[in-house]
Image (cartoon, rainbow over all chains, first blue to last red; front, side, top):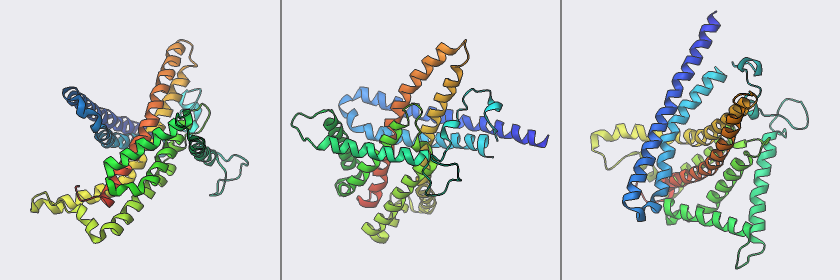
Length: 78
Length: 250
């Protein structure tokens, strides 16, 4: 019985951790959207900023990946 | 915790593809055991070698396909190092190029059905990330001496804030190898697990057409992710290298 409750807690925790993945999605969407609106205003400068775009996306995505990792740990390792 | 195939109801358990198995015997895995991970790592190395050997053995004015692929990769990584790290970073270009090609081929080989995605294991990516982290730290002290520590002392901030910022900068410096490795492994693992989940749905008759379509679409997305993640891994290496070699504009 106690094991079942612990299992339930782990699964609920994994579900809560998945919120972080969605939040990272919001962040990545912000970056890509703002890049696109900037790039449409000044297309000639867009190509030189691709590296910054990918670095920004990578940093925003890292936290989502951390949340995903916590979810995986709760599902398979705890 | 999730004990096995029977508890989830999937015909294929989505995590089964990541199990490390010895290839030639059932003995417990030692550090020298040839497993599916080491096999696919070796194949990735052979692919890099093959690309470079076949790309450069007939240096034609009008390049053949392998030559233009090799030249494309070379030019892209060279520009990236020059742009992100700066002129002083060019001497580390061979390392960055090696890293890019290795991660790229490891990612792409994982997309072959029934193959093994080596970069989906944190053990593999953490090794790569730790090499980057240690070499950046050592190179920083070699190139700049104790001045490397000025990176943590943000001169542009007001004086009372600087100690707080120093702590934050220090933490973010030591989290680098973690995020660097988990990003690659997490992306690859999540993508391949999603592929297997939809492949599991394909065995249920009603939604099978949808599932097969979804697997095809996700496979295309995964190809994109494999290339983009190799690119991101490399560009972050360049960003970290900039702290060690470039002028202080952190």
